[in-house]
Length: 117
Image (cartoon, rainbow, N blue to C red):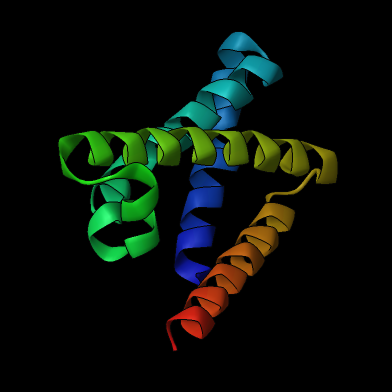
């Protein structure tokens, strides 16, 4: 959780929003960075149905299931990205989002571990 959170928060809550905001303003910069954050999760989402039986039940199998899972993952992470951008600007620090991202990833891993036991 630490490496992923530091990399993603630095890229998608510090660098990209600042670059986009310089051109389009803070609000549009955050939206653009959040869309990039969503697209960043396409590759991991491609295998979601293969490794997660619940995702397979929800989204289905085959190409349609994979597309549904990817769309869900991209939209979900883009919305989460908007939230994290708001937190970042509200806290005036990317450290706040790094800590929150580590916490949310750690909770998700813990829940997955407990359920799979």
